[in-house]
Amino acid sequence: MSTLKKLMAEQSPESQERIWAKIEKMRLIFLLKFLNNRNLLFQSKKTLSLVYCLFRADFFEKQKINCFGIGDEVAKGIRVLKQEEDKKFFLN
Image (spheres, rainbow, N blue to C red):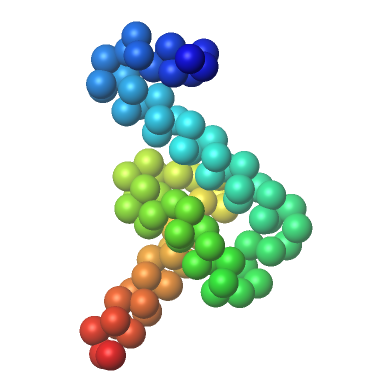
């Protein structure tokens, strides 16, 4: 069993949830920094779609993520994209 699994098994369900939220937040920060460093963050809707697929819009809102100002803009872009997708779904 991996070290992470052993550690998680020793935690309460509430602690496990907090730990996974922190892990997701770290993954998100890494992804945003990677995309931003390569000037890919806002080049296309495809990038926002990718970010949305990897990290649901509700995750951004729940965690109140702010990656040095990047998180707020991405969350806003994702909400707009999600609204557009929802509109398309209902119009078709």
